[in-house]
Length: 441
Image 1 (cartoon, one colour):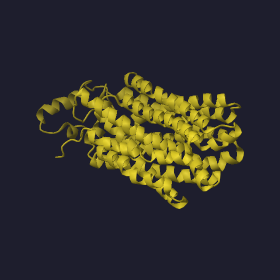
Image 2 (cartoon, helix red, strand yellow; image 1 turned 30 degrees about the vertical axis):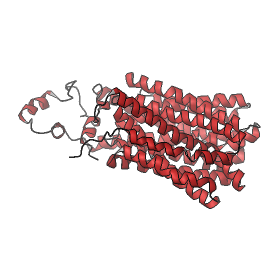
Image 3 (tube, one colour; image 1 turned 120 degrees about the vertical axis):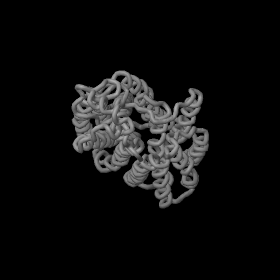
Image 4 (cartoon, helix red, strand yellow; image 1 turned 60 degrees about the horizontal axis):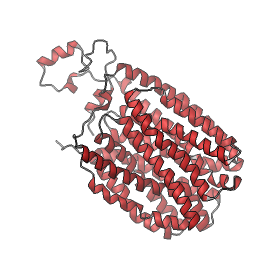
């Protein structure tokens, strides 16, 4: 996992007043390079100061923690569905529509936001996105009608659409060349937040009802304060950076047709992963209550175990991808989970909990690998790629929630899990992805 080039691109010398705008070298260093042409540029460049390296890692930690806060807040929606179902007298289709509104708004906006910030960087976009999330939380807590719940879901989706592409970009900038690790570290914050959300919902929201959601405004305010500091760092970093040096490509150039085919395969894999996750995140509590007659609190704890295992799988997926390549991680994550999903609908309560943890751990490792693979596939488009795939994730999840809710109304919640069990078989399409790995020296 050599990161010499990545570190050189990120930790620039502190004084850039005399830098050459193309090569990023001072005139003195350029003059010396003619006499030392046999020395690699990375060796000639000054070593980064420990404080600078620490600052980059601090930024990675900051966006990961804010991802935790952001996704913890957003996971409240599916966590309080049983409460909303009773309070507003909703059917499964109406519950699915809440997810559809939230996730489709996020899905449609994210690629456009990513493309826009590729061209015109907006250092404080992250703090603005968290402000939308804060407003959405308050609206959910106070909404008196189903229609206002849908509006609140759209506002939260807007906050998510702003947050994810730009925070993924910050994670890549702060990666030191270890892109898989950085994406996993960033993603595990979100997955951990998604896991904590149902647990806190059981402890805080369930006893107080819908209005208990307002307590989570504290987390959103904390996120705004941290992300404002990240915005200051990003603004300073932009002032010191040469154009385009943050989007260096180390992968092979591929024909347009090959890139389009690979993007189509990745889209199918996202469909497989997030339709299945929609069944777990949106309806696993109902499945457990219907099939095993457990309490709402017990079902939420089971969901917490599933999401906690997913967070662990996310963290390991990126570093493994840095070592063996993201393509192999995608293979193992999507297709490798198939035996467990096929067993789940026929297991007893104990094995349902065990299998759900295994499924969460295995299937969650794919997303970081897919994002890193796509960023190498389309160099120089970090924001656009992040927006596309975060948008696809949200969109597929929202469509999946709505479709599966309608299927559950027509058939049963148990049938939904028997149907979704076959989705990971789409992982066979990974065979069509081109190998982007560089030959090892």
